[in-house]
Image 1: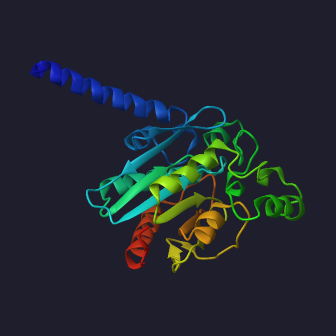
Image 2: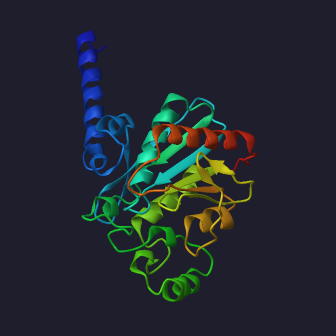
Image 3: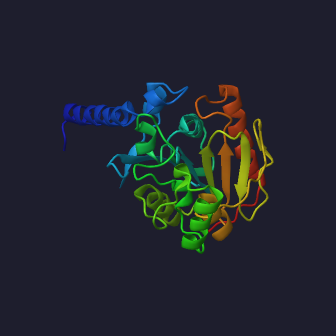
Length: 271
């Protein structure tokens, strides 16, 4: 039997190590994000998922799970590295989920594209120059993304879909998360169009805080197309008004409450 003093020592060491890991995970990230303190980032207790970005950075995640969850919700942000506010809102919402998870198993991925976010200057694409939100395996991907990129965007480098679907470790990671976690809802946070978008088989939320529903269409290779249209997995896309500033704290709280109310009122089929 371990001596009580040794037990206290090992427990204290475990807490210190856990705090150090959380601090290390936040060292690079929080300085780039608006309205995010080091304390907020560390309190999120983000953990390496085991997956890494193109440049080898760990893709961080956090699960918040009550004893008997009714729903599984996946929240992903900073898919585009220059949308700083999206990661900030994800971290603020993570804190709210920590305080009151209720009947929901939450999985947060606040920064899907750390290479793009930490680049100087930050950019939308990952380190391979791929728009991760055009890299998901939607039907006729090669033909449709080629037409979209070459004709509709005139080969805009910010929207290059890559050479093949799931060619990027970051999009492959999210794809694998969807397959293993089987979320009832995906909340994808972006900026800066200031609207609420939705893809999926259930009634969408009409508003989240000051953002009102304005469905912008379906794009080849997008998360909304792959998840919501092709796989009947509701995808709520939050387009914040600014990539550089978060909404006020009161507005972020109102968005969170509206999201929770919609989840409570909507029949979300279990998978």
